[in-house]
Length: 301
Image (tube, rainbow, N blue to C red; front, side, top):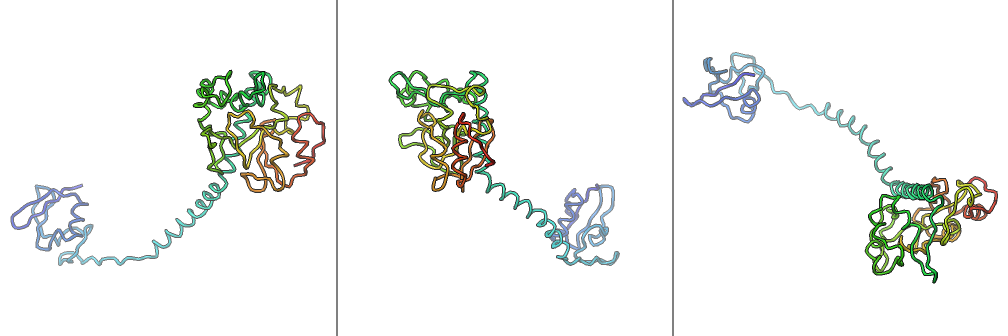
């Protein structure tokens, strides 16, 4: 790419690249009376005799005048239509996935809880007890505290004094820590009035029993895929460290029951799968899903 030099009233300036020279022509930085030369070993010539590759704002006599092209909006409109044709489906897909995100997060969190429960079972040969109490029957620890090491929360778990009650002063700091997997994006209620971090899920107290862990083969005879382990709540959230964060599925699922999900609740089954149960489920089927060893027949749900 050649260097260009500009001469005006015996004053030389440059060098300019092709692009810089074109910019000067367009912006009026070069007049018809100016002299131009290409590289230092060539003679100056009138600016209006520049090659046709450059703009000629004044026209010239030595080369045909270049007619400035009018702006044609048709190609631009065509390009915009193509862009919109591509972007609209993508935007629709984005907003559809965004609107469904809270539900997918809830399912993902329950699946992580299910995996943690199974990893606990693999290590201890039983699922964790739903609650640990002392000899005076005072609640000490919850099942959600016991599975922390299997949720990549071992740091918080090690700060808990398991011999002390969960709400004792020594245990207050760790139980004030929010555990993301225990929270649903469908509510901003994440702390109790006294500052403890909440859980939006509760365990099935027929499976996660007090002071006793259940073995898959010996205790859950109805089948893992037919037994609810934990469920999504809609109100009365308790701290994840509270050992009383247990309930019956029939107490929180059904007509008139509140849920963070519209029309029903997500539940974690014993095999680790997550299902959405409609609030209109047959009460007999829900009761059968609640028991680990009831022997009730269960139809599709």
